[in-house]
Image (cartoon, rainbow, N blue to C red; front, top):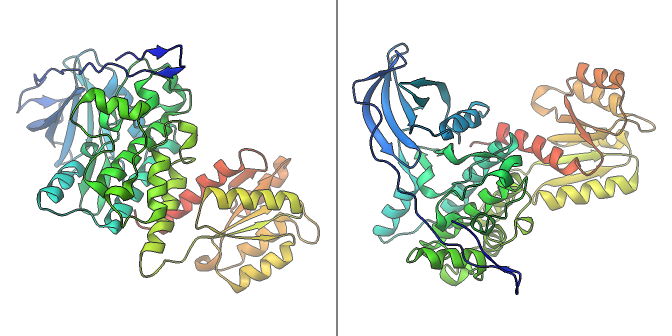
Length: 432
């Protein structure tokens, strides 16, 4: 597909869609032993990148999935690199990689379940639709897996219900074959993905460096719209009309098709579907928090919110940090303290999850506060994060000796670094 531009109006015109027809010839025969270990017992599926087999691991006596790339494709090598660095219940585990008779292969956990696409079809064919609680839970778990992937610099680039496996209580993102390192997105010459879930900047070939995660967020918005209404925002009848809708069409209001949708959820879906990447939410982790907050308001009861204490003796800095955190993570409880002694008294009196503390303060400095917190029993001890501007190696060594390994700069990187830490904490405290 090539995107043209109307130079008179400055607007992108609709690109043509040229569907790719993949080969359907399976590279290996059933019964063949790949790599001297994996005996192929069944074909699980085929797609544009290759074939997926079920195989018996003869060494460990377990069933695995073995994905084989078509000759000449490097997609599987990229997929292996993407998955190898991820450890998350929403991401399949990779066991091995290699080459057999000129074909690259990837050995992964054998996922048993059905795709979210199948669940949607079954729900609609039965005359039902997903409840608001089911939609919120599904979107939160997908966003959580995206947050983990984006955290290591990986964008999926083909998020859609067919690439989400429902395995009991797990939702697992599959088919990372289109993955591109997010920083490399603008150099990727291909338009990849499924048009119903494609972001406008992909269709117009205007993706900039660092915008890979925003492509996934747009697709998440399409999935959310579909879960709520039973259809994608711009339909599926004509590829050209779908592309026109993504690039030039007005964003449809989900509440016109599903009036009982909570207003906050409708607003979030609309933000995810914004035409410009910079108008979408600031990262998948922020989406997780917003969905959790909406779910809490929608349910009859709410879980205890995550509580963060900010400790800094500079009132202006404290105000900026607090405002930034509240904006990035709706539903986060934030308390600010100019005095570390007062903060310690509140830590003793209430439950707090994270304390972000400045290194240099009067009365009690950050290291002294960390020492006092280290004496709190494990079950109640908050995670200490050091706010640093110019800490020397001796200060950092003291913090590490106290079990403090998180350091956040007091500059433009503050929100990104803190959101990452809070995301790690959230995943350790809550079920996937």
